[in-house]
Each structure stands twice: as structure tokens, then as C-alpha cells.
Image (cartoon, rainbow, N blue to C red; front, top):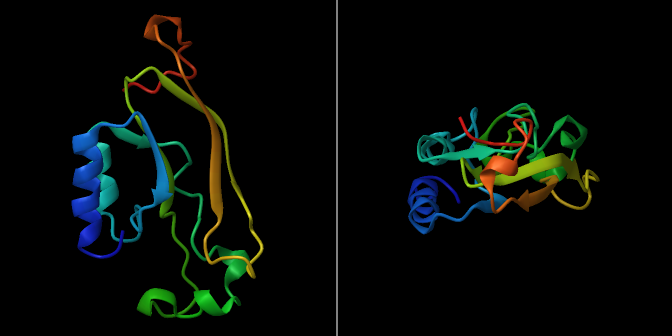
Length: 132
């Protein structure tokens, strides 16, 4: 998703109501936040913390694709690649992490997590229940 299309794609995701989805949303708390905010307002939450820089992290600042990337000047990184879980869907995630951190591979880090679903939400421990 990029620019104004990110909000349209976020609306499409909300209308389909998947329990889990993964992707480069080109939206984060400090970069084009509209898409992420729409998802959060409609019951989705990110598995990785907001501080997890997945696009042009500091280890990539000298990588050609990250130099003045997206028209932004200077070193700039953002948390725009997400694993999102629909709240109160009986879904849990743990071992969330990034991978593929070699700058010659991509300007994005990969994101991963172990994700599962309980069919009886009452069997979920409070630790994994993603329901606020």
C-alpha cells in the first residue's frame, strides 16, 4: 500500500475480516499512519511493537535503496511491515521477530511470528488473549 491507496486497502481488509494478515502496509505510527490507525480502530492490533523498525532500519542506512528513500531526506526508518491480529478472535501470537536483515537483500526486514487459534476463547490464557 502506498499513499492514499493504503486507506482503501485497509478498508478492504476490515471488510473481509481475516483473523490474521501479514504485509508491507506502508503505514505505521510515524509514517503515513492513516491505514494503521484505521485497522486499529476496527479491531486489529500489531503483533510486533511499534518500535520495531522494518523499513530501512539503522543497519541499512548505507544501502542504496534506503538513501533518501521515498523522498525522505537523511536516514529514516519506519515500522511499516506488520503482522496484524483481529482482537477477540481467539488468535494468539508469540515469538514475533524480524529476519533477513542483510541490506543487500531488501530495504525491508521480514516479519514472522508463531500464530495459532483456539476454538474456545475461554481456554486462552490471559497472556496470549489479544482482546482489549
